[in-house]
Image (cartoon, rainbow, N blue to C red; front, side, top):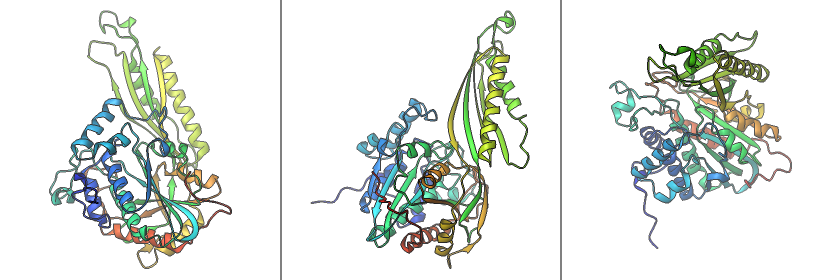
Length: 441
């Protein structure tokens, strides 16, 4: 029987053990949240060839009535691009429509805990630098998708996850390992559908790992602090169009309502003793200078490092939006498109990560993330069921901060991360809940 032909989109990767080659391939083919068809196809193909049981679609990703899902035109374009880039049609059909999550599991040869690792896959709507000083441009692996860029290290996270899967394919480890390849971390939209689908069921310990975020190469922080709560909202204002000179009193300006909301969202006061953030990141409105704007869209976020303050800040922000709409006598529709919660690393996870990193990097106990990640929802799902969870930072030098056009990762840290995680799994130091079976249902 002849072997299955190698898909053309994998031509640039000889082996997923080559974590740098995988990272560069993914960097050259960035995909936004819920459109990661090529990335997910690569993950599925590689894991199945390594002997892992891999699943995708609604079994692991419940996107029913999800407000943060891109519109049909965007999803259809992603499907067409994946086909043009050589992804086999059957795989595209499995992953189309935003169903890009992949969950894989492998049982070890010894009893032990079920350990899950979150690997986020999506890129950002950023135009990558074309300057010769930018290493991906200089070496020929910069983004081939204009206006989309891996500017947060998720390409490295996927590459680390696949290299780890290859290393563990000998099954010489205790318990089970579950790999959660998550779409749409940007905008904190992808974890909740995975939680709803039950991917955390039976997990004793869950770990999320992030590259960079201000920690230099050669350092590992087993516990990220300042992993803060956030709510993302999209507001649609609907007014009444009218001639701006002939009949301005007959119009109801959605633009002015959105502008009023934007200014006053930024006027919300801080809370004493708490880190808070408010940002309006998008405002689109109007059609012409002489027309009262009938429609407007505004996107904003709130953040806080306290769950209670986060809830109150969200309430106040919604009040600002509704009041601005009422003031200008327009209708408003407010959708929460994504969210994350405050999360903290359990001591057992930090201790196991510290031991696994010995001799591989300088360990600093904590590092402030100062941002939000919906891995927090996965962490909380495990913790609330009696398990433990953690969020670690692997240091990586970069010429620019995350979410910038010149962001890059130090590729020498990728194999270090793989080895540390492999040691963590094989060492069996993470706790197992009494009576836990661990198998994904």
